[in-house]
Length: 98
View (cartoon, helix red, strand yellow):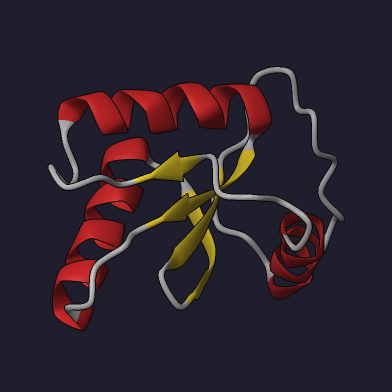
C-alpha cells in the first residue's frame, strides 16, 4: 500500500497531537522493540516513534529498519521522531480516497 500526498497530509494532521508511544533506549532496535511497535501499530494504526541518537546516519538506518521490519508506511520524519501508519483489520482511521 502506498499513500497518496493527500492521505499523507491527512495522517500528518492526525499525528500532530500524538505523543511518541515508542522510545528507543540504550539497546537500540531490538526484537522486543519491534514487537512493541507491531502491537502499537495494530492497536493505533498511526504512531510516533522517538529515535534518540545524535548520529544522523544511524538514525536513518534505524528508521529504515523499523519501516522494513513492520511493513508500515512512513508518513513523515521530524527531527528524531518517526511517524508510521499501517492499516489494521479494524480500519480505525478512514483515509481520504485520493
